[in-house]
Structures are given as structure tokens and as C-alpha cells.
Length: 73
Image 1 (cartoon, one colour):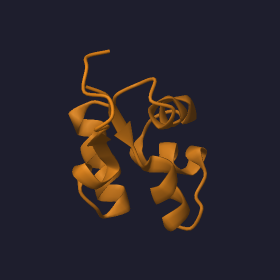
Image 2: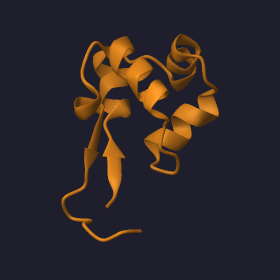
Image 3: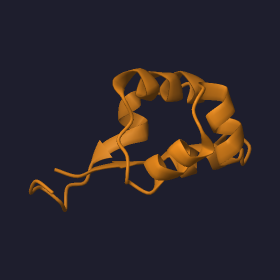
Image 4: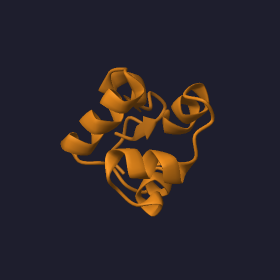
């Protein structure tokens, strides 16, 4: 199962904020936000909650299972 995210889309919706601005708002590094967006890092549940609160949406709106990737990777 591959989990993907819509962080970049939500950054644009929020006024085209930078990765750095988002990172500062949720208390992580810009590199962490970059790695999440690229699918190289899955955030902890606590960080996923912080991101959803920041964007005023649900975790499910930010993170989803890629239907085309049902096998374990």
C-alpha cells in the first residue's frame, strides 16, 4: 500500500505558502516537509494532526492510499 499526500496542493490553497513557512508553523524542518511531499517520509500521527489543523481540514484530505498501488512496497 502506498500512501500519498496533497500537501503541495494545500500549500497553494493556503496562499502559496512555502515549505519553510509550513515547516515553521508545525514545528519541523523544511527538509521534513519536502520529504513528506515527495513521498519519502510518512509523518507521525501527531504531525499529520498538526498539518490537518493548520490547513483546517482532515487527515484524510491530506493523505490518501494510492489505488493504483495496492501491493506492499
